[in-house]
Image (cartoon, one colour):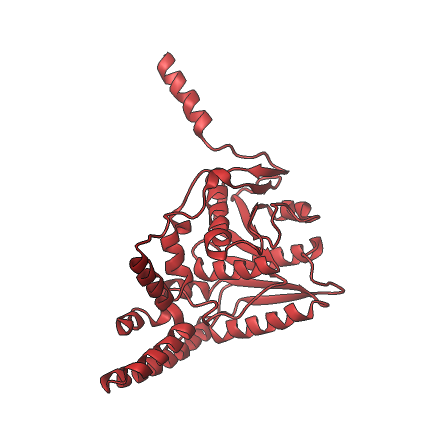
Length: 334
C-alpha cells in the first residue's frame, strides 16, 4: 500500500495548483508550453508568407535556427485573478497585454470580473519596451494556455485585451489566433489590418477571424487614439469583419478603462449574436475577386518575362493580402 500512496503524493505535488476564487495572485509561475506559442507557429500566423520565407532564407544563410520556444517560463511572473463564484459553464477568460512592465489587475476591475465570471491573467515584463515577437505575443499565448490548464475555462469565451500599446498587440493576436481568442477589447490602441505592419494570416484563420468580436474603448480626450480607432474600424469593414462596436468614454483621456467602461465592454463581448451570412458572403466574394485580378496580372507579367515587375507587384500583394495570396505568392517568389 505504501508505494501507491507515495505515487499519489508525488502526482499531487507535481500537478498545477488552481487558485482560490475571488483573489488576485501575483508572481505566479507557470510551467506548461503550447504549440501555439512556438516560434514556428508565430512565424506562420503573424508574418506574411514572403516575410516568413525571407526569415527562413536568412536563417539558412547564417546557419541559425529559431528557438522552439522564446520564453523560459520558470523565469516569468504572471498576475491571475479568479472571480467568485465559479460559473456553471466554466470561467470566461481575459488575457490582458499591458503597456507597463509589472503584472497587475487594473483598479476597480475585480467586481466587474466577478459579475461576468471572468478570469484575468497578465504577464510581467510584457510592456511596450519588450520584443513583440519574442516576448509579448508568446507570453500572452502562454498565459491563456496555462490558465486553461489550471482552471475550468469555457474555450468559447476566451478573449484577448490590452491597453494602449498592449491593445495593438491584442489586435495582432486576435487576428493571428482566432481559434484561441473569440474576441478582443482594444482599449486606447488599435491599427488597420491588411498591410505590411499587420499582415493577414493564412486563409483558414482569417475566415475565422472575420467572425471575431472587436470592442474599442477610448477616452473622448484621447484624440490620436480615436483617430486610430476610426482607421482600424474602417479597415475591418473593408476586410469583412463586421462584429465591431466602439465606446467613447466621456471626459476620458489616454487611460485604462474604468469599471463602467469595462462592464460595457464585457457585456458586448459576451453577448451572443449571429453574423449576417449574406453580407459576409458578398464581402468575401469581393475580396476574392480583387485578389484574383491581382494574381492574373502577376501571371501575365511572369509569362512575359518581366521579373522585376513581378517581384514589385508580388511584394505589394503580399503586404495587402498576406496569407490569402499563399501558396501562389510563395511559388512565384521561388
